[in-house]
Amino acid sequence: MLTFQYTDTELKKIMSTLTIIIDSREQRNEHILAYFDEKKVAYEVSKLDTGDYSCKIPKNEAYGITRDLYLSSAVERKNSIDELAQSTKEDRFEAELIRSQKLTHFALLVEDTYENLVTGNYRSQYDPKALLGRLKSFESKYGFSTAFIGKALTGHYILHELWYRARNELKKLG
Image 1 (cartoon, rainbow, N blue to C red):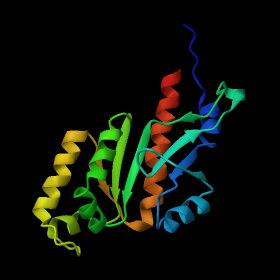
Image 2: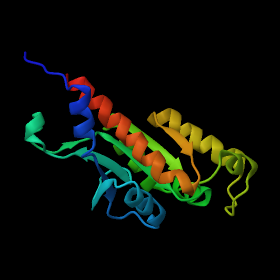
Image 3: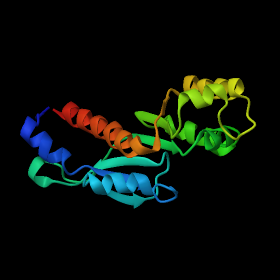
Image 4: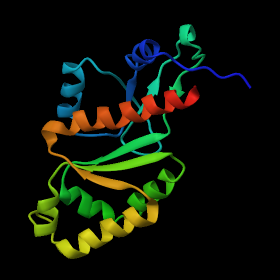
């Protein structure tokens, strides 16, 4: 079997073409788009079956990439603990977690603090201990982790979560 390995220079050039894919149903993400625009991160809007954000490496025949490479990873974003609380009550959320099992990586991002979750500093009437228990049960059952990130750093988190996963996948090709 023939194998190859990208040089650091080649890897840097390939990674500069990384394109974030944003689910077409994603809402209220202007702060994330503003971050991507500011950092000159390529993105496109398309329907994703799982998660709100994923990425691809576009076709680049000069580096042996004969078609777009789609990363088998996704980030699901909840804009608040209230949205998280509501989601955990819906069958649709667990169905998404079941679909996430087909991916190599899945992360849940909540735009709030863990402290607010634990202390019940949110509008929902969901008991903080019960909500945390539900979330931790889902994490254990479906093998994902949850990051609590403020809105100002959400775009940064999404980009770096997907960028390093894509880079490591490219390194495995060699």
